[in-house]
Structures are given as C-alpha cells and as structure tokens.
Length: 292
Image (cartoon, rainbow, N blue to C red; front, top):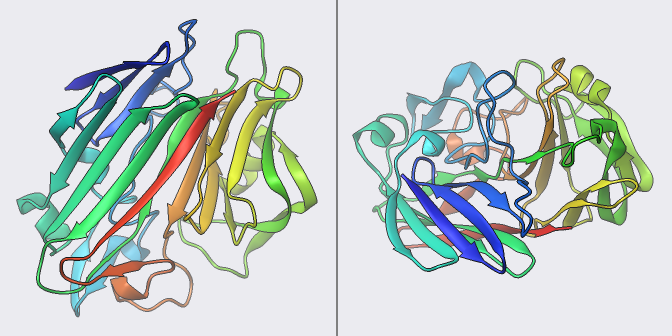
C-alpha cells in the first residue's frame, strides 16, 4: 500500500512494503528519489535491518546456533503496519513473525517514521527489544537519488561534498565481504569527490569508516542543485551505483554495521558496529535530507 504525504509544497510517498519513502517531489514536480528501473536496479530506498551488507557464506551464529539471512537483512521485504499518519508524516512498524524468527530469533519492534520537513524529508528508525534476552542488530539506510537530477545533465557533472576536510580510504568489498587491509585511497585532505562511473566499476561500493563529517551533499558542480544528507550517529557511510552500467542514480547509505569483516568471529554480537539492546531497551537512528 502506498501512503501519500503532502507538505511545504512538496509531495512524497511511503510504501508499507519495507516502510520506505519511495518518492519525493518538489514544488515543480521534480522527482529526487530513484524510481527503481529494473534495467539497472529495482530498489529505491530500502531499510537495511537487522544486518547491513552480506554475511560470510550467508550465515550468522546467534547464541551458538546458525541462521541464514540474505544480504541487507529481511526488513526491506516485509510488510509494515501503518500505526498513524498526518498530512506530512507516517509512522509504521514491523514486529517479529514466523518468517523473521526463522532468520533472527528475537522478539522486536521496528518503528519507522517518514516525514516531509521544511528542508526536505527525514527518516527515523527506532528498534526496541521486546524479548527477554539481549538482542544484537545492525541498521542502515540505502537512499537512491536520481543522478543526474535534471535533463541534459551527466553523472560526471556531479560531486560528493563533505562538511569537513577528509582524508579517508575506501574499503573495497570482495564477493561482498570486507578486509580492512584492502582499501583504495579516495579522499586526501579535501572536501569534494567528483563523481566518475569508473570508481564504481572498480570498487563496486565506496565505503568510508571514521569520517569526521556528519553531513554530505550530492551536488551539480555548476548549479549546486542536489541533496544534502545529515547522518550523525552512523559510523560508516557508503555510496553505490550499479557497476559497469552507467546507471542514472547514486545511493547515499549511512550504516551502523557492515558486511562481514575478515577476522571477525561467528557470533552476531561481534559484528562491526553492532548494537546490542537489553530486554526492554530501544535505540533510535535517523537521517535528514535537504533538497538543494
């Protein structure tokens, strides 16, 4: 089911499948969110939960028992329940069910709030442990923006801009898995990274860990049109477009967790940037996007 939002002269749509915001149009009708062309990638803005990235051999150990889970977890394929809505916001939730328990043996409540704001939109995610034992989880965003944004522009006309000067190499996934010794230098004491398809053809995904910045922009180098994301609270940030496809979108992905890292143990609770909630405890993560 699609839920329509209106506010500040803009419109948006939220899909109860995955609880994701799948459209955001400005006052002129310009669409900022990638619309999921299967010729490139059918996704739009999936929520990554309870894992981010891939598991080694697609499996994870939880309290000594092995479970299988697909890349990026199961939330993006689950039907969320609409809790409440206003003209410019909607709140949805996902709770455990037979399917989730077969992959992730925990009772939980995952609440999503999608909201139009004066500047753009905001997405917030609250994970609550409703069970009786400690519950590990990871969570990430995967928002795909149209790039180029305007007719006549090229992907290479855009750049990634950070709010602080950065020196940081990108982790390079190999068969979806990470090794912190396998990196490619990208940011060398600068604020910007001009976009080139060849980066993604080479590395698949640009994955940065330990950035000083908490704000990143995707901007046209001439007009400065684009989007700005505030991702405070997320220790990793990734950028992705389909390799070797010249695809007209770029995903900006704030992560609290990542694919299996070389040398990590088999237990879920030992995954990089994993959060462990005590029974009854909850944790909220979110990001805000400005339309430029």
